[in-house]
Length: 272
Image 1 (cartoon, rainbow, N blue to C red):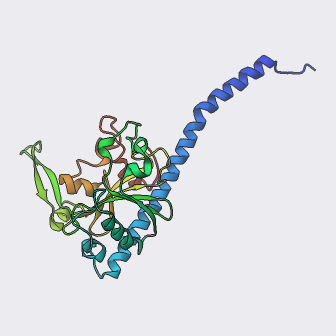
Image 2 (image 1 turned 135 degrees about the horizontal axis):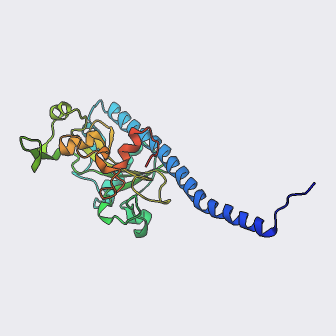
């Protein structure tokens, strides 16, 4: 009976093919796994923050963050231009409800200028850099928070004006009210702060929609994701600015920020 054997050349050729396939597929598998790990971490980070806000409001007997002592004792705004004393006071107040182990006044201090959040395609995005104070939680999450007006919040959207046939031809600044937002089907009518969550700290990729996710903190203590229906109603009066409106699918509009809503609405499963 004739024995079947491989020549050395055949074995080397086979190993080369296997190596090429591995080089192509393994990075993709690792990247996909890391994306899903960050997505799962975001679920925990959001829950931690919203639980802290609920506990803070409960202790103060309030249903509005602006009515809590943490917000009332804050200066008119809080960002990376605030004094160390004001930042430390805010951190101390928040730490009663969410364990904060460190804080930084801006992104560059913690990340370095070369590691600021990039667009999802890897493009630098300095204009999208948040201006908030960075809070590092015990679990390693980084919350970048910017408070625009600690006394009144922020209610202004820029709604499109449409003609009789429904075509937009101009825009106007509109101050949202709870009634007007509810009528449009939304829930967000007053922004207490903007909050960007980085699920893995200074570790890469430091990219919108991958490990960095922007939210609007409603005065009700809920984090409303960028690209979601509620944020779209707040700013546009309708659903024209949601991720479903080519905001996380069209490469010309894609920064990755609006993918935050897509991720959450898909049960924290990455499909982009």
